[in-house]
Image (cartoon, rainbow, N blue to C red; front, side, top):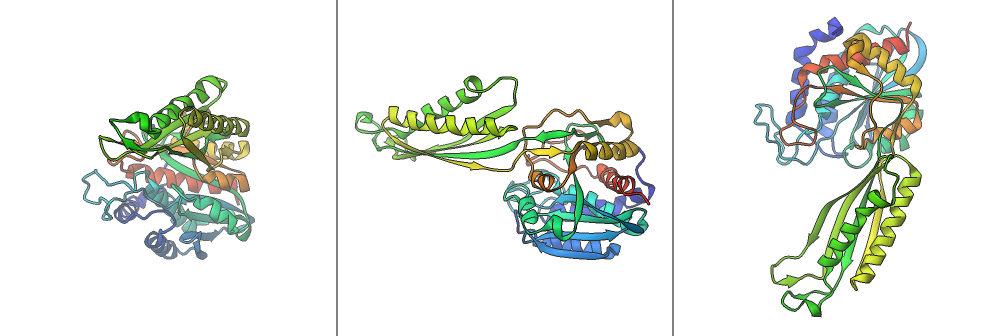
Amino acid sequence: MAVVNRIAEYGPDMTAWRRNLHRHPELGFECHRTARYVIARLRSFGVDAVHDKIATSGVVALIKGRAPGPVIGLRADMDALPIAEETGLDYASEVPGVMHACGHDGHMTMLLGAARYLAETRNFAGTVAVIFQPAEENGGGAQVMCEEGLMEQFDIAKVYALHNAPGLPEGFFLTKDGPIMAAVDTFHIHVKGRGGHAAMPHETADPIIAALGIAQAIQTIVSRNHVATEELVVSITQIHAGTADNVIPDTAYICGTVRSFDPVVQGMVIDRMRKIVEGQAASYDVEAALDYERGYPQTVNSAEEVAQAAQAAEDVSGAQLVDTRSARQMGAEDFAYMLQARPGAYLFIGQGSSATLHHPAYDFNDRIAPIGASFFARLVEQAQPL
């Protein structure tokens, strides 16, 4: 691999940065310690300006090139997950019940490595805005940064991001133009019946039986109301009811997720779910209410920016390790909001064999950090040459 030699020399430093971040994970918008650590590194690199407290704890640093030109944005997410780590590593999370189980510590490290190199060399025109964003996992930090004027304040013309991918070979880049990740919605269904003694069910209006009927009927949305050749996922992930073996409770709760690529399909799901909830509630003589929350939109890459990113990836990893024909992924990503605001591209970078994302045994592969940093550096130099 054609990893930039200077960035390869950063390897031990990058590993130290990443493992420090791994030890001290933070959730949502409250990434204050993380922001301070990132800012300290950026200032030591000699960046031209640092702006903090964007979307509560987000950071943007500017690095000016040697000639006038546009501003290119490079984004890394900062937040961790509410998962108890089970890696047993000597740099494991020191925060109980919180860990970097999605590799955001590695994403920040790759961007820090690129920022250090770009601040040293400045072999590009225009300006680089390195963006460290909180609350990707929950809260839509990218949306908040955009609403607070991220793109306008820094005059960003295009924007890029990387995400590690367990199971892909180390340094393999995967992307596509157009939609690459799904829109994500969440639904909550509250069922209210009439509880009583489990030995006398005829005196009750059982919310558990009603919840089971609703859950089963919802599964027909994908199998009977949707064209089978188009991507749609409707998954029930929670059902809660009852506290004792001899009591029929008053209430039950259902929760789940919907993943889609087409607003028409999304609207169909909402309509069918409302009718199912109302109809099943009536058939079981209970009350039921649907609370449907539209979440992150689909992540849509721009063709020109995908081509530019693919060229940079090929320069680093070789053409045999770059694929621009990715299948659309049913996962979701709030980088979608930045891509709604500006053209850009989202790519996956392989990190080899490891535990999957969001698993308590997951750990970012430090060997790919210089590869990701080299990609960002080459991308800037090629997209905005002197």
